[in-house]
Length: 203
Length: 204
Image (cartoon, rainbow over all chains, first blue to last red; front, side, top):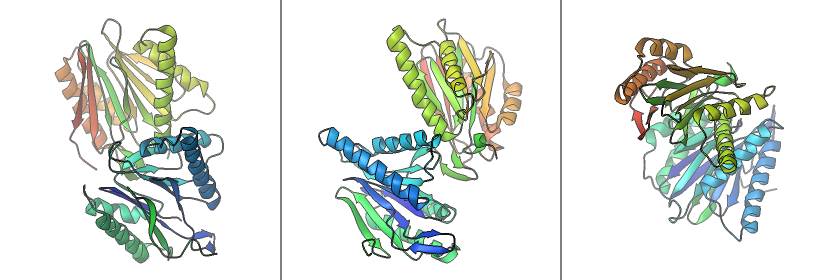
C-alpha cells in the first residue's frame, strides 16, 4: 500500500512518497519515483496500482506541457492544474476509472499567490486544498502528527522535519516495510529531489 | 455504507418572511477519516439563488461546474436571469438525464423569486423534486435535521431570527452525526443582499 505525504510551508511544498513497487508477496522494484514533475513549479505525487500511477501522471504532465506549448509558454497556476487534474479523473470515473489517489503541490510566484499550495485528490476525484495531507494507510498514522506540528509560516527545514517524523512513525508502527522514501521540494527554484532511499535512476 | 454517505454532509434551507436561509457543514471526509474542514457544499448561483449539494464530493464539484455552465448558457440564450423555480427544474433535468447512472447528490435549492418571496425545493439523486414553504434538509443527518426543524421552525421569521433558528437546528443535528460537522456556514438571503456567517461549533 503506497504512502504519499505532503506538507505546505511558507515558500513551497514538500512531497514525499515511498519507493516500493509491489504486488501480493513480490516486490518488483524498490527505487520507484512516484512524484512526477508537472511544470517548472509543480509536482504530482501519486499512489495506486503501477499501471494507473504511471499512465495517469504521464498523461497529466504531458497535457500540461501541451497547454504551455499551445499558449506561448503561459504557465497554469497550481489551482488551475489541480482542477484540470480533477476534471480528467472525474471524466474517467464513469468510463474507465484511474485508481489513483494523489497530492498535487505547487508554487505560485508572488504575482500570482506567492506561496506554496497543496491539493488532496482521491480516486473519486474529490478535490480539496489542504495545508498538509496523506494518501493511503499512512494517513491513519501521520495526520495526527501533522495536526499537532504544522503551523502557518514554517520554513523548509521545519516542513522536512515534519515529513521525517511521519516517515519514522511509519517505520515503527506500520506493518508493511517501506524501506525507501523519496522526498521532493517544490519552491521558487522549481522541483528538485531532496533525498531518496534508493536512486530512481539505478537500473 | 452507501456511496451517498462516503464524504458526509448536512444542509438545511429554511424560509422566513421575505427571506430564505441556507446552511451547511464544512467537513470533507473519507468514511471515518476527516480530510478537510473547509469544504463548503452551498454555492451561490446568483444574488437570489443558492444551491446546496449533499452527497459524493466529486459529484458535488462536477455538478457545481455543470450548473454554472447551464446557467451561463441559459442567460446567454434568453438574455435574462434564471429564477429559482426554473433553476430547480434545470437541476432536476440534469439529474434525470443520468437516470441509470446517476450523480450521487441530493440537492436543495433556496432562493427568492421575482416578487422576492422565498422559494425552496429539494430533490433526490434522480431529480424528483419536492416544493415546500417551510424547510428542506439533505445529507447524512436528515433524521436529526427533520426533528430539529420541525420543533424550532415558525412561520414568517425575520432574517435575524431565521439565522438563529437555522444555526441552532443545524448545529444540534450535526453534533449527533459522525460524518458531518467540523464547522458550518450560514447564508441569509434577502432582497437587499446576502449575509454569510461562519458558525463556531464542535470540531469533532
